[in-house]
Image 1 (cartoon, rainbow, N blue to C red):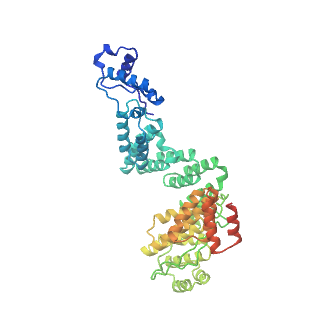
Image 2: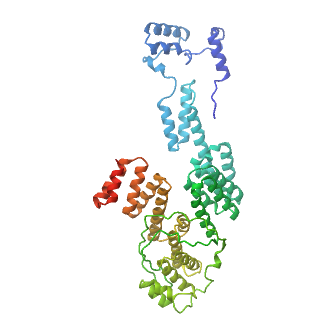
Image 3: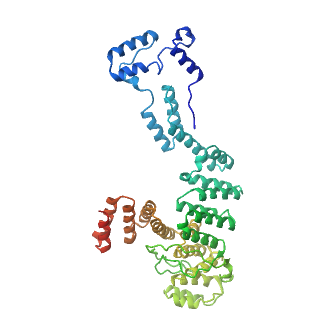
Length: 489
Protein backbone atom coordinates (compact mmCIF):
# COMPACT_ATOMS: atom_id res chain seq x y z
CA UNK A 1 0.00 0.00 0.00
CA UNK A 2 1.31 3.48 -0.87
CA UNK A 3 2.05 5.59 2.23
CA UNK A 4 1.86 9.40 2.10
CA UNK A 5 4.07 11.21 4.62
CA UNK A 6 4.66 14.93 5.10
CA UNK A 7 8.20 15.79 3.94
CA UNK A 8 10.63 16.31 6.77
CA UNK A 9 11.21 20.01 6.11
CA UNK A 10 7.47 20.70 6.19
CA UNK A 11 7.20 18.84 9.48
CA UNK A 12 10.03 20.98 10.89
CA UNK A 13 8.35 24.09 9.59
CA UNK A 14 5.08 23.14 11.32
CA UNK A 15 7.01 22.62 14.53
CA UNK A 16 8.61 26.02 14.25
CA UNK A 17 5.24 27.67 13.72
CA UNK A 18 3.78 25.82 16.68
CA UNK A 19 6.57 27.07 18.91
CA UNK A 20 6.22 30.67 17.73
CA UNK A 21 9.68 30.72 16.14
CA UNK A 22 8.65 31.43 12.57
CA UNK A 23 9.80 35.06 12.69
CA UNK A 24 13.35 33.94 13.44
CA UNK A 25 13.65 31.89 10.24
CA UNK A 26 12.77 34.23 7.36
CA UNK A 27 14.06 31.68 4.88
CA UNK A 28 10.96 29.60 5.57
CA UNK A 29 8.50 32.51 5.28
CA UNK A 30 5.39 31.91 3.13
CA UNK A 31 2.92 34.15 1.32
CA UNK A 32 -0.29 32.47 2.48
CA UNK A 33 -1.39 30.53 5.55
CA UNK A 34 -1.17 26.77 5.38
CA UNK A 35 -4.09 24.43 5.88
CA UNK A 36 -2.99 24.02 9.49
CA UNK A 37 -2.82 27.82 9.94
CA UNK A 38 -6.41 28.10 8.78
CA UNK A 39 -7.75 25.56 11.25
CA UNK A 40 -8.93 28.13 13.80
CA UNK A 41 -10.52 30.29 11.11
CA UNK A 42 -12.40 27.32 9.69
CA UNK A 43 -13.68 26.50 13.17
CA UNK A 44 -15.04 30.03 13.65
CA UNK A 45 -16.67 29.94 10.21
CA UNK A 46 -18.34 26.60 10.94
CA UNK A 47 -19.61 27.91 14.31
CA UNK A 48 -20.72 31.21 12.73
CA UNK A 49 -18.77 33.16 15.37
CA UNK A 50 -18.38 36.34 13.33
CA UNK A 51 -16.43 38.37 15.91
CA UNK A 52 -13.80 35.67 16.43
CA UNK A 53 -13.77 35.00 12.69
CA UNK A 54 -13.02 38.59 11.78
CA UNK A 55 -10.32 38.84 14.46
CA UNK A 56 -8.63 35.70 13.14
CA UNK A 57 -8.71 37.06 9.59
CA UNK A 58 -6.98 40.25 10.78
CA UNK A 59 -4.34 38.22 12.58
CA UNK A 60 -3.66 36.09 9.51
CA UNK A 61 -3.44 39.14 7.24
CA UNK A 62 -0.94 40.71 9.61
CA UNK A 63 1.16 37.55 9.54
CA UNK A 64 0.72 37.00 5.79
CA UNK A 65 0.36 40.46 4.21
CA UNK A 66 0.01 39.02 0.71
CA UNK A 67 -2.96 36.86 1.62
CA UNK A 68 -6.56 37.88 0.92
CA UNK A 69 -9.40 35.69 2.14
CA UNK A 70 -11.92 34.56 -0.50
CA UNK A 71 -15.22 36.40 -0.81
CA UNK A 72 -17.03 33.18 0.05
CA UNK A 73 -15.41 32.19 3.30
CA UNK A 74 -17.07 28.77 3.21
CA UNK A 75 -14.61 27.89 0.44
CA UNK A 76 -11.99 27.67 3.19
CA UNK A 77 -13.87 24.73 4.68
CA UNK A 78 -12.90 22.60 1.71
CA UNK A 79 -9.60 20.92 2.60
CA UNK A 80 -9.64 18.07 0.11
CA UNK A 81 -11.14 16.97 -3.20
CA UNK A 82 -14.83 16.04 -3.41
CA UNK A 83 -16.15 15.60 -6.94
CA UNK A 84 -12.61 14.81 -8.05
CA UNK A 85 -12.66 11.58 -6.06
CA UNK A 86 -15.80 10.41 -7.84
CA UNK A 87 -14.14 11.32 -11.14
CA UNK A 88 -11.12 9.20 -10.23
CA UNK A 89 -13.28 6.17 -9.49
CA UNK A 90 -15.27 6.68 -12.69
CA UNK A 91 -12.11 6.86 -14.77
CA UNK A 92 -10.76 3.72 -13.13
CA UNK A 93 -13.98 1.88 -13.93
CA UNK A 94 -13.60 2.93 -17.58
CA UNK A 95 -10.00 1.80 -17.70
CA UNK A 96 -8.63 5.36 -17.92
CA UNK A 97 -5.89 4.75 -15.38
CA UNK A 98 -3.66 7.57 -16.63
CA UNK A 99 -6.53 10.05 -16.37
CA UNK A 100 -7.33 8.94 -12.82
CA UNK A 101 -3.67 9.27 -11.82
CA UNK A 102 -3.50 12.75 -13.35
CA UNK A 103 -6.53 13.95 -11.38
CA UNK A 104 -5.10 12.46 -8.20
CA UNK A 105 -1.82 14.32 -8.65
CA UNK A 106 -3.67 17.57 -9.34
CA UNK A 107 -5.73 17.11 -6.18
CA UNK A 108 -2.61 16.43 -4.13
CA UNK A 109 -1.05 19.63 -5.45
CA UNK A 110 -4.21 21.63 -4.70
CA UNK A 111 -4.70 20.14 -1.23
CA UNK A 112 -1.26 19.39 0.21
CA UNK A 113 -2.66 18.02 3.47
CA UNK A 114 -5.07 15.65 1.74
CA UNK A 115 -4.33 11.97 2.32
CA UNK A 116 -5.45 9.69 -0.49
CA UNK A 117 -8.02 7.17 0.84
CA UNK A 118 -6.42 3.76 1.15
CA UNK A 119 -9.13 2.12 -0.95
CA UNK A 120 -8.58 4.58 -3.80
CA UNK A 121 -4.83 4.16 -3.55
CA UNK A 122 -5.13 0.37 -3.69
CA UNK A 123 -7.51 0.47 -6.65
CA UNK A 124 -5.21 2.85 -8.50
CA UNK A 125 -2.21 0.60 -7.98
CA UNK A 126 -4.22 -2.47 -8.95
CA UNK A 127 -5.54 -0.81 -12.10
CA UNK A 128 -2.04 0.24 -13.13
CA UNK A 129 -0.75 -3.27 -12.49
CA UNK A 130 -3.66 -4.73 -14.47
CA UNK A 131 -2.86 -2.48 -17.41
CA UNK A 132 0.79 -3.55 -17.29
CA UNK A 133 -0.22 -7.21 -17.11
CA UNK A 134 -2.61 -6.82 -20.05
CA UNK A 135 0.19 -5.29 -22.13
CA UNK A 136 2.46 -8.19 -21.24
CA UNK A 137 -0.21 -10.70 -22.25
CA UNK A 138 -0.86 -8.90 -25.54
CA UNK A 139 2.85 -8.93 -26.38
CA UNK A 140 3.29 -12.51 -25.11
CA UNK A 141 5.94 -11.24 -22.66
CA UNK A 142 5.82 -13.97 -20.04
CA UNK A 143 8.68 -12.55 -17.95
CA UNK A 144 7.00 -9.17 -17.51
CA UNK A 145 3.70 -10.87 -16.77
CA UNK A 146 5.28 -12.95 -14.00
CA UNK A 147 7.08 -9.92 -12.56
CA UNK A 148 3.82 -7.96 -12.53
CA UNK A 149 1.78 -10.57 -10.68
CA UNK A 150 4.67 -11.14 -8.28
CA UNK A 151 4.68 -7.44 -7.41
CA UNK A 152 0.87 -7.32 -7.24
CA UNK A 153 -0.42 -10.72 -6.06
CA UNK A 154 -4.01 -9.44 -5.95
CA UNK A 155 -4.03 -9.70 -9.74
CA UNK A 156 -4.44 -13.44 -9.21
CA UNK A 157 -7.51 -13.20 -6.99
CA UNK A 158 -10.44 -15.38 -7.92
CA UNK A 159 -12.47 -12.38 -9.06
CA UNK A 160 -9.75 -11.81 -11.67
CA UNK A 161 -9.54 -15.42 -12.76
CA UNK A 162 -8.86 -14.46 -16.37
CA UNK A 163 -5.45 -13.20 -15.28
CA UNK A 164 -4.47 -16.60 -13.94
CA UNK A 165 -5.79 -18.28 -17.06
CA UNK A 166 -3.79 -15.88 -19.24
CA UNK A 167 -0.67 -16.42 -17.17
CA UNK A 168 -1.03 -20.18 -17.56
CA UNK A 169 -1.51 -19.77 -21.30
CA UNK A 170 1.65 -17.65 -21.57
CA UNK A 171 3.66 -20.22 -19.64
CA UNK A 172 2.32 -23.07 -21.73
CA UNK A 173 3.21 -21.12 -24.86
CA UNK A 174 6.85 -21.06 -23.80
CA UNK A 175 6.84 -24.78 -23.08
CA UNK A 176 6.57 -24.32 -19.32
CA UNK A 177 3.70 -26.74 -18.80
CA UNK A 178 4.68 -27.21 -15.16
CA UNK A 179 4.24 -23.50 -14.51
CA UNK A 180 0.87 -23.55 -16.26
CA UNK A 181 -0.22 -26.50 -14.15
CA UNK A 182 0.75 -24.65 -10.97
CA UNK A 183 -1.37 -21.68 -12.05
CA UNK A 184 -4.38 -23.89 -12.72
CA UNK A 185 -3.82 -25.72 -9.44
CA UNK A 186 -3.89 -22.42 -7.55
CA UNK A 187 -7.38 -21.73 -8.89
CA UNK A 188 -8.66 -25.19 -8.01
CA UNK A 189 -7.21 -24.88 -4.51
CA UNK A 190 -8.58 -21.42 -3.73
CA UNK A 191 -11.59 -20.40 -5.84
CA UNK A 192 -15.16 -21.32 -5.00
CA UNK A 193 -17.31 -20.91 -8.12
CA UNK A 194 -18.03 -24.36 -9.55
CA UNK A 195 -18.31 -23.15 -13.19
CA UNK A 196 -14.90 -21.47 -12.83
CA UNK A 197 -13.34 -24.66 -11.48
CA UNK A 198 -14.86 -26.71 -14.29
CA UNK A 199 -13.54 -24.26 -16.88
CA UNK A 200 -10.10 -24.27 -15.25
CA UNK A 201 -9.81 -28.04 -15.27
CA UNK A 202 -10.92 -28.05 -18.90
CA UNK A 203 -8.23 -25.52 -19.79
CA UNK A 204 -5.62 -27.57 -17.94
CA UNK A 205 -6.29 -30.52 -20.25
CA UNK A 206 -3.86 -29.06 -22.79
CA UNK A 207 -0.88 -29.01 -20.41
CA UNK A 208 -1.41 -31.77 -17.86
CA UNK A 209 -0.44 -35.40 -17.71
CA UNK A 210 -3.15 -37.91 -16.90
CA UNK A 211 -2.01 -37.98 -13.27
CA UNK A 212 -2.02 -34.19 -13.02
CA UNK A 213 -5.47 -33.97 -14.58
CA UNK A 214 -6.84 -36.54 -12.15
CA UNK A 215 -5.13 -34.68 -9.30
CA UNK A 216 -6.98 -31.47 -10.21
CA UNK A 217 -10.28 -33.32 -10.34
CA UNK A 218 -9.59 -34.97 -6.98
CA UNK A 219 -8.66 -31.62 -5.42
CA UNK A 220 -11.93 -30.08 -6.59
CA UNK A 221 -13.92 -33.07 -5.30
CA UNK A 222 -12.23 -32.90 -1.90
CA UNK A 223 -13.20 -29.23 -1.53
CA UNK A 224 -16.75 -29.59 -2.84
CA UNK A 225 -17.95 -33.03 -1.84
CA UNK A 226 -21.53 -32.37 -2.92
CA UNK A 227 -20.27 -31.67 -6.46
CA UNK A 228 -18.29 -34.91 -6.74
CA UNK A 229 -20.54 -36.26 -9.48
CA UNK A 230 -19.99 -33.10 -11.52
CA UNK A 231 -16.22 -33.38 -11.28
CA UNK A 232 -16.26 -37.14 -11.87
CA UNK A 233 -18.20 -36.61 -15.08
CA UNK A 234 -15.78 -33.85 -16.07
CA UNK A 235 -12.76 -36.03 -15.47
CA UNK A 236 -14.27 -38.93 -17.41
CA UNK A 237 -15.08 -36.66 -20.33
CA UNK A 238 -11.61 -35.13 -20.51
CA UNK A 239 -9.94 -38.51 -20.27
CA UNK A 240 -12.19 -39.75 -23.06
CA UNK A 241 -11.03 -36.81 -25.15
CA UNK A 242 -7.49 -38.12 -24.73
CA UNK A 243 -8.46 -41.46 -26.19
CA UNK A 244 -9.19 -43.14 -22.87
CA UNK A 245 -12.79 -44.16 -22.27
CA UNK A 246 -14.49 -45.83 -19.34
CA UNK A 247 -17.34 -48.26 -19.57
CA UNK A 248 -20.68 -46.56 -19.02
CA UNK A 249 -23.66 -48.82 -18.66
CA UNK A 250 -26.32 -46.14 -18.38
CA UNK A 251 -26.93 -43.57 -21.12
CA UNK A 252 -26.42 -40.02 -19.89
CA UNK A 253 -28.06 -38.20 -22.75
CA UNK A 254 -31.08 -36.04 -22.13
CA UNK A 255 -30.86 -33.61 -25.02
CA UNK A 256 -33.19 -34.77 -27.78
CA UNK A 257 -33.04 -33.56 -31.36
CA UNK A 258 -35.26 -33.74 -34.36
CA UNK A 259 -34.61 -36.47 -36.90
CA UNK A 260 -31.46 -35.64 -38.79
CA UNK A 261 -30.03 -36.69 -42.12
CA UNK A 262 -26.36 -36.54 -43.12
CA UNK A 263 -25.12 -33.01 -43.76
CA UNK A 264 -22.88 -34.07 -46.61
CA UNK A 265 -22.41 -37.36 -48.42
CA UNK A 266 -19.50 -38.23 -50.60
CA UNK A 267 -21.30 -36.69 -53.58
CA UNK A 268 -24.26 -34.60 -52.37
CA UNK A 269 -25.26 -32.11 -49.71
CA UNK A 270 -28.40 -32.72 -47.68
CA UNK A 271 -30.52 -30.01 -45.99
CA UNK A 272 -29.94 -29.41 -42.28
CA UNK A 273 -33.04 -29.64 -40.07
CA UNK A 274 -32.95 -27.58 -36.87
CA UNK A 275 -32.43 -29.48 -33.62
CA UNK A 276 -34.53 -28.70 -30.58
CA UNK A 277 -32.83 -29.21 -27.24
CA UNK A 278 -34.83 -30.68 -24.41
CA UNK A 279 -35.34 -28.36 -21.44
CA UNK A 280 -33.80 -30.60 -18.82
CA UNK A 281 -30.18 -31.52 -18.38
CA UNK A 282 -29.21 -34.83 -16.90
CA UNK A 283 -27.52 -35.07 -13.58
CA UNK A 284 -23.80 -35.66 -14.05
CA UNK A 285 -23.00 -39.31 -14.44
CA UNK A 286 -21.22 -40.93 -11.50
CA UNK A 287 -17.67 -42.08 -11.95
CA UNK A 288 -17.62 -45.54 -13.54
CA UNK A 289 -15.87 -48.22 -11.58
CA UNK A 290 -14.46 -50.14 -14.51
CA UNK A 291 -10.93 -49.63 -15.69
CA UNK A 292 -9.97 -47.37 -18.56
CA UNK A 293 -8.93 -48.65 -21.90
CA UNK A 294 -7.85 -47.17 -25.18
CA UNK A 295 -10.70 -45.89 -27.33
CA UNK A 296 -9.26 -47.68 -30.33
CA UNK A 297 -10.35 -50.97 -28.78
CA UNK A 298 -14.00 -50.03 -29.05
CA UNK A 299 -13.86 -48.04 -32.32
CA UNK A 300 -14.05 -49.75 -35.72
CA UNK A 301 -10.74 -50.38 -37.39
CA UNK A 302 -9.31 -47.99 -39.99
CA UNK A 303 -11.09 -48.20 -43.33
CA UNK A 304 -10.42 -47.15 -46.92
CA UNK A 305 -12.20 -44.01 -48.08
CA UNK A 306 -14.57 -45.86 -50.40
CA UNK A 307 -15.33 -49.29 -51.84
CA UNK A 308 -18.30 -50.61 -49.84
CA UNK A 309 -20.92 -51.51 -52.45
CA UNK A 310 -23.81 -50.86 -50.03
CA UNK A 311 -23.31 -47.08 -50.06
CA UNK A 312 -26.16 -46.22 -52.46
CA UNK A 313 -28.72 -48.35 -50.58
CA UNK A 314 -27.57 -46.94 -47.24
CA UNK A 315 -27.74 -43.34 -48.47
CA UNK A 316 -31.19 -43.92 -49.98
CA UNK A 317 -32.52 -45.27 -46.69
CA UNK A 318 -31.05 -42.28 -44.85
CA UNK A 319 -32.64 -39.80 -47.24
CA UNK A 320 -35.99 -41.53 -46.77
CA UNK A 321 -35.67 -41.25 -43.00
CA UNK A 322 -35.60 -45.02 -42.61
CA UNK A 323 -32.75 -45.05 -40.15
CA UNK A 324 -33.21 -48.64 -39.03
CA UNK A 325 -32.85 -49.80 -42.61
CA UNK A 326 -29.88 -47.49 -43.01
CA UNK A 327 -28.24 -49.03 -39.96
CA UNK A 328 -29.00 -52.54 -41.20
CA UNK A 329 -27.55 -51.82 -44.65
CA UNK A 330 -24.37 -50.29 -43.20
CA UNK A 331 -23.63 -52.90 -40.54
CA UNK A 332 -19.87 -53.42 -40.17
CA UNK A 333 -18.95 -50.72 -42.70
CA UNK A 334 -16.10 -51.54 -45.03
CA UNK A 335 -15.30 -47.99 -46.14
CA UNK A 336 -15.28 -44.52 -44.59
CA UNK A 337 -17.99 -43.08 -46.83
CA UNK A 338 -20.55 -45.62 -45.65
CA UNK A 339 -19.31 -45.30 -42.06
CA UNK A 340 -20.13 -41.60 -42.32
CA UNK A 341 -23.66 -42.37 -43.55
CA UNK A 342 -24.06 -44.86 -40.73
CA UNK A 343 -22.97 -42.26 -38.17
CA UNK A 344 -25.98 -40.07 -38.96
CA UNK A 345 -28.36 -43.01 -38.97
CA UNK A 346 -27.33 -44.39 -35.58
CA UNK A 347 -27.29 -40.84 -34.23
CA UNK A 348 -30.97 -40.56 -35.15
CA UNK A 349 -31.57 -43.93 -33.50
CA UNK A 350 -30.38 -42.46 -30.18
CA UNK A 351 -27.03 -44.26 -30.24
CA UNK A 352 -24.69 -41.29 -29.78
CA UNK A 353 -21.66 -43.27 -28.61
CA UNK A 354 -21.64 -45.39 -31.75
CA UNK A 355 -22.27 -42.29 -33.84
CA UNK A 356 -19.36 -40.56 -32.15
CA UNK A 357 -17.00 -43.36 -33.16
CA UNK A 358 -18.01 -43.24 -36.83
CA UNK A 359 -18.09 -39.44 -36.98
CA UNK A 360 -14.56 -39.40 -35.58
CA UNK A 361 -13.38 -41.82 -38.26
CA UNK A 362 -14.98 -39.74 -41.02
CA UNK A 363 -13.62 -36.48 -39.65
CA UNK A 364 -10.09 -37.85 -39.87
CA UNK A 365 -10.54 -39.87 -43.05
CA UNK A 366 -9.74 -37.30 -45.71
CA UNK A 367 -13.20 -37.37 -47.32
CA UNK A 368 -13.08 -33.69 -48.29
CA UNK A 369 -13.52 -30.39 -46.50
CA UNK A 370 -17.33 -30.44 -46.40
CA UNK A 371 -17.57 -33.98 -45.05
CA UNK A 372 -14.83 -33.28 -42.52
CA UNK A 373 -16.65 -30.18 -41.30
CA UNK A 374 -20.01 -31.94 -41.12
CA UNK A 375 -18.50 -34.97 -39.40
CA UNK A 376 -17.08 -32.67 -36.74
CA UNK A 377 -20.51 -31.10 -36.49
CA UNK A 378 -21.85 -34.61 -35.93
CA UNK A 379 -19.26 -35.18 -33.21
CA UNK A 380 -20.48 -32.01 -31.51
CA UNK A 381 -24.12 -33.11 -31.68
CA UNK A 382 -23.30 -36.56 -30.35
CA UNK A 383 -21.41 -35.04 -27.43
CA UNK A 384 -24.33 -32.73 -26.71
CA UNK A 385 -26.71 -35.68 -26.79
CA UNK A 386 -24.51 -37.20 -24.09
CA UNK A 387 -24.77 -33.91 -22.18
CA UNK A 388 -21.02 -33.33 -22.62
CA UNK A 389 -21.57 -29.63 -23.11
CA UNK A 390 -18.11 -28.21 -22.63
CA UNK A 391 -16.37 -30.84 -24.73
CA UNK A 392 -18.85 -30.12 -27.52
CA UNK A 393 -18.11 -26.44 -27.13
CA UNK A 394 -14.39 -27.08 -27.54
CA UNK A 395 -14.92 -29.07 -30.75
CA UNK A 396 -17.26 -26.42 -32.15
CA UNK A 397 -14.83 -23.62 -31.35
CA UNK A 398 -12.17 -25.35 -33.44
CA UNK A 399 -14.41 -26.13 -36.42
CA UNK A 400 -15.39 -23.82 -39.27
CA UNK A 401 -19.09 -24.61 -38.99
CA UNK A 402 -21.71 -23.11 -41.27
CA UNK A 403 -23.80 -20.30 -39.84
CA UNK A 404 -26.80 -22.59 -39.34
CA UNK A 405 -24.67 -25.29 -37.76
CA UNK A 406 -23.06 -22.83 -35.37
CA UNK A 407 -26.40 -21.33 -34.43
CA UNK A 408 -27.76 -24.79 -33.69
CA UNK A 409 -24.77 -25.86 -31.63
CA UNK A 410 -24.55 -22.61 -29.68
CA UNK A 411 -28.28 -22.73 -28.97
CA UNK A 412 -28.04 -26.23 -27.53
CA UNK A 413 -24.95 -25.35 -25.52
CA UNK A 414 -26.67 -22.31 -24.02
CA UNK A 415 -29.72 -24.47 -23.28
CA UNK A 416 -27.70 -27.07 -21.40
CA UNK A 417 -25.56 -24.52 -19.58
CA UNK A 418 -28.63 -22.61 -18.48
CA UNK A 419 -30.37 -25.69 -17.10
CA UNK A 420 -27.19 -26.82 -15.37
CA UNK A 421 -26.65 -23.37 -13.86
CA UNK A 422 -30.18 -23.46 -12.46
CA UNK A 423 -29.56 -26.90 -10.94
CA UNK A 424 -26.43 -25.45 -9.33
CA UNK A 425 -28.48 -22.49 -8.00
CA UNK A 426 -26.49 -20.02 -10.08
CA UNK A 427 -29.56 -18.02 -11.00
CA UNK A 428 -27.75 -15.06 -12.54
CA UNK A 429 -25.90 -17.37 -14.93
CA UNK A 430 -29.18 -19.11 -15.75
CA UNK A 431 -30.74 -15.81 -16.77
CA UNK A 432 -27.71 -14.80 -18.82
CA UNK A 433 -27.57 -18.11 -20.69
CA UNK A 434 -31.28 -18.09 -21.50
CA UNK A 435 -31.17 -14.44 -22.55
CA UNK A 436 -28.35 -15.29 -24.95
CA UNK A 437 -30.32 -18.28 -26.26
CA UNK A 438 -33.33 -16.06 -26.86
CA UNK A 439 -31.12 -13.59 -28.74
CA UNK A 440 -29.92 -16.38 -31.05
CA UNK A 441 -33.30 -18.02 -31.72
CA UNK A 442 -35.53 -14.97 -31.41
CA UNK A 443 -37.66 -16.75 -28.82
CA UNK A 444 -37.30 -19.01 -25.82
CA UNK A 445 -39.09 -22.37 -25.45
CA UNK A 446 -41.89 -22.21 -22.92
CA UNK A 447 -40.28 -24.64 -20.47
CA UNK A 448 -37.04 -22.66 -20.47
CA UNK A 449 -38.95 -19.40 -20.10
CA UNK A 450 -40.56 -20.80 -16.96
CA UNK A 451 -37.15 -21.79 -15.60
CA UNK A 452 -35.88 -18.28 -16.34
CA UNK A 453 -38.84 -16.86 -14.44
CA UNK A 454 -38.03 -18.99 -11.42
CA UNK A 455 -34.38 -17.90 -11.70
CA UNK A 456 -35.49 -14.28 -11.35
CA UNK A 457 -37.72 -15.25 -8.44
CA UNK A 458 -34.91 -17.11 -6.65
CA UNK A 459 -32.62 -14.15 -7.27
CA UNK A 460 -35.09 -11.93 -5.44
CA UNK A 461 -36.75 -10.18 -8.40
CA UNK A 462 -40.36 -11.23 -7.88
CA UNK A 463 -41.69 -8.41 -10.08
CA UNK A 464 -39.73 -9.57 -13.12
CA UNK A 465 -40.62 -13.20 -12.44
CA UNK A 466 -44.32 -12.35 -12.17
CA UNK A 467 -44.22 -10.48 -15.48
CA UNK A 468 -42.71 -13.53 -17.19
CA UNK A 469 -45.19 -15.95 -15.64
CA UNK A 470 -48.17 -13.72 -16.46
CA UNK A 471 -47.06 -13.40 -20.08
CA UNK A 472 -46.81 -17.18 -20.36
CA UNK A 473 -50.16 -17.57 -18.61
CA UNK A 474 -51.81 -15.18 -21.07
CA UNK A 475 -50.41 -17.23 -23.94
CA UNK A 476 -51.56 -20.54 -22.46
CA UNK A 477 -53.07 -20.83 -19.00
CA UNK A 478 -51.97 -23.99 -17.18
CA UNK A 479 -51.68 -25.21 -13.62
CA UNK A 480 -47.94 -24.70 -13.98
CA UNK A 481 -48.28 -21.00 -14.79
CA UNK A 482 -50.89 -20.48 -12.07
CA UNK A 483 -48.57 -22.06 -9.50
CA UNK A 484 -45.68 -19.94 -10.74
CA UNK A 485 -47.66 -16.71 -10.48
CA UNK A 486 -48.80 -17.58 -6.95
CA UNK A 487 -45.19 -18.16 -5.92
CA UNK A 488 -44.33 -14.52 -6.69
CA UNK A 489 -46.63 -13.12 -3.97
